[in-house]
Image 1 (cartoon, one colour):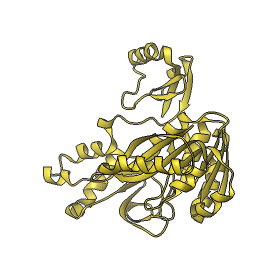
Image 2 (cartoon, helix red, strand yellow):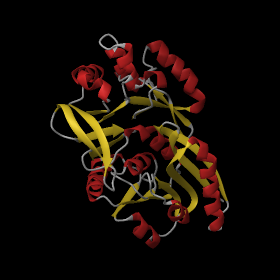
Image 3 (cartoon, one colour):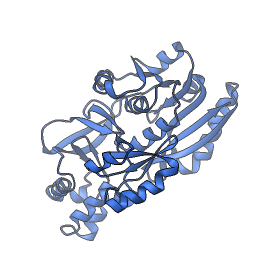
Image 4 (cartoon, helix red, strand yellow):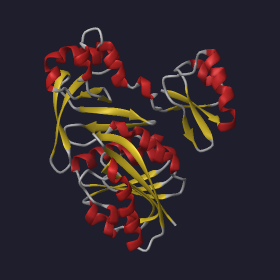
Length: 336
């Protein structure tokens, strides 16, 4: 969906004009790009006559309009109050809807599929979530409607990301976080991304910034898809991506240091010392932490900074819910 790139000082005036013309998309939140505001607009030819750059970018939906709320409202006439309480949040990845169906709703699968298709008429596959399996935490999925495939191209933040859900891990809920990091990065930076997957972080950052990214991934299938994604987005990227297939714990010690390290660390993996050692100015370290232990997590990072002889400042941000009282968090570590 398009957005209008407007200088910060003119944003409110342009926003009022867009609303007056019926071109402002109130379902999405505005974004930021250095000294510019990205105003969500409708896909209308008049937008291109406003005198500002129009970007093909996905902006975050407003919380009260998240997709799972829409499904709930669609099913309200068919489901009882008790059944609605059992509905789980779902994801749309490309043209595949992925949903968790609890035992209480197994008898309502057809109605759930009907509701998903009503909310998202473009979907061609509905897949039911299973459990994570193996070292690469690949989910088990069963297709309950549509085409017999788990491969799709997901559009996010102005890039296209090819994924095969049966072979690689991909989390579409991190699109806002990937965009946040892209806005923190400055042109000319050297960036390291271990545990890079099919390159969602690398692609989004290279889309907006002229940087040199070195990405590392162990999963051969993710590596293959990542190379495809670089070619798929070649004309969109401002920055360059070097992709290395291998174990981060073996590859990183052989690499130089970088201005910024972004570590979307897999659950259960401790790569703090490894990634901090490679960061000169910034480390963005992801982990899964109980809400009572967030302070302890920050203390552990400062202790590792001290051990490595680095003067650091740590700011911890809750990124998403994982399970009751446990959050996926990002520690933004500034190194002086």
